[in-house]
Image (spheres, rainbow, N blue to C red):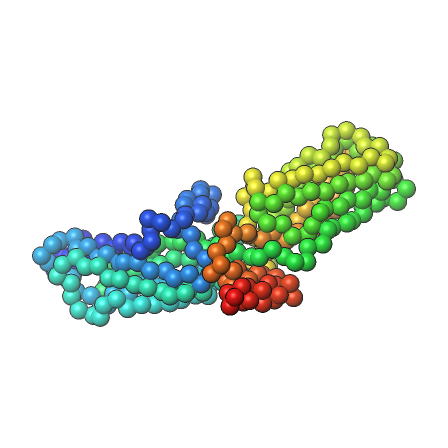
Length: 333
């Protein structure tokens, strides 16, 4: 309890206007636990109420102003305390004065730009939150409420298959093919592996999905590789002329969209890693980058333009520009 303002203090609560109907999404916290948060998309309005409840009714609470902020920030774990804000909006709810009874204040942040997806990684965290503050001379009272943002993309028009060869001269020659290079998060990777020459004794073969998180710039760049999935293709020796099908379902894994150079602070990329192990435990592997993107469950017409904008940020390609033009035609039509 404070000895100032006649021993008065207060509790703050932030409530969204559409809390009963808004969808929630699971998101991982730093300690690895998953919690559910209200889900928003780029361009959506964030509105609600700030409830200031006095702990001692009848006693007044002096303050230097009441405000609410909408913040999007990136925190690098090796640089804790130094938060990089890429969105910072403020609404003043009350001028300096005093409160003599519990009060409720309405707020609205209209069509808020939320350019990046919420992300918690090995070395970096990107989060969005609302922060309500009652400013006081010595000790502010504040309350934060996190939300989750998903970035939607439209279906990529250019999505060529991946064909690669792995060879060790006069010992091994295989070709592998994946049906495409860009996959949505609930997609299926379909492929085939052809053995053209096999003169070493292979005992095991698998495909790994590797997530590579890159943080920092210049001399202080950190890379973290995390094996998200291991898919056993075969156990035993293949023969020349054999082909093995691959079908890997992505829905069961903890994946995010590919993120490239987010606010010049970090990137998250995904790779398919083909691993062969011979009888002498030697490992042969070939790595290929794939692009992951998030497909909306139900993309409403009003969302098509925003999704196209997200796609353009995400890809920066001619394909996404045409998606933007197509969305504009749909909305005008």
